[in-house]
Amino acid sequence: MQADQLPHLDEHTTLVAASADDVWRGLCAELERSFSRAPAAVYAWLVGASDTRVAGPRPLAEGSAFPGFRVLVAAPGEQLTLRGSHRFSSYLLIFRIEPQGPGRTRLRAESRAAFPGTAGGAYRRLVFGSGGHAVGMRRLLAAIRRASESSSG
Image (cartoon, rainbow, N blue to C red):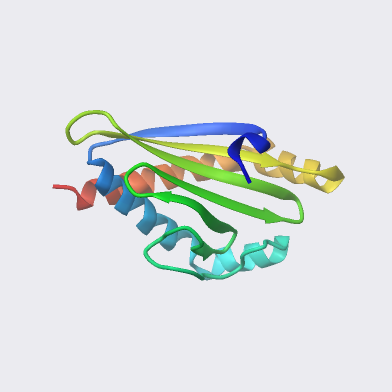
């Protein structure tokens, strides 16, 4: 699945007071912490996600999976692309790590997804129309920033 095959939904960014390598480590650790817990597995099962459990290589690499997501691209210090699908949507979450100078890195999270059919449209309104996705992404990026900054220097 190529990024340009799915419609762009949104993008969230945060500036992190840490190196790109620290951001990579913080990103991977926070994704594992956030998505490897029981509530994520239950949600993935309820919506019929293609990945419902932790699997594959660790640390995160191409082919790694956790509930709702499979790693499509793992370029340490540069990019992590996650893909997923369930009965209401096919989606990508692309994290880009961009050095901004010594000890400063921008982390961008781009969401792309298709929501086929009436049920998909209703799901999109529920998740995106409610603002829930934006709130979740801001919280995730803040947690990644904290994890990255606490492990730097």
